[in-house]
Image (tube, rainbow, N blue to C red; front, side, top):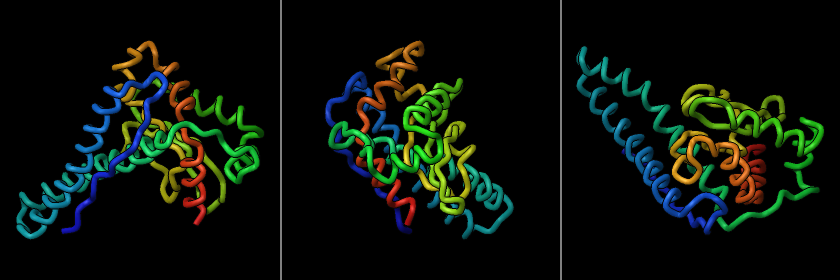
Length: 199
């Protein structure tokens, strides 16, 4: 069986987000990769068993797979956005123009996105590209397997589970964590995501 491979990230020192927090967060990502692979191997085993108990386990593990898989992929977008240090959004670039076309200005989009990120509960604030309508869409995903937009492609992923910020910020520092996320963001990586999403 082919296995998903854990990616390695070269993350520099970040503003507000400690190296210890990143190290612990990367362990969590590693767990998603491990469990996505484990579930696929279990599904294969249950499928071969072809008995009533195995079929029940097959359906339950298949249901669980989206949680582990999306946890894996979302974290890859998240950590990749920190690699090579912060860089500004290209003001004349395609992503900046697409954001302005959809929301009127970058600042208007950013204010809306930050409001979504501050949603109560755990999950992800996401910027997607919909290849059907050719437009950008902001979205909140509960946990990480509920609320994904079918067919849309990830451009930006902001982890709003408490594990991503509580070590450094405490629960009351959620808004500062969101600010620091954008202060550390490598917009070139996000622009590359947008370019890939349009293919």
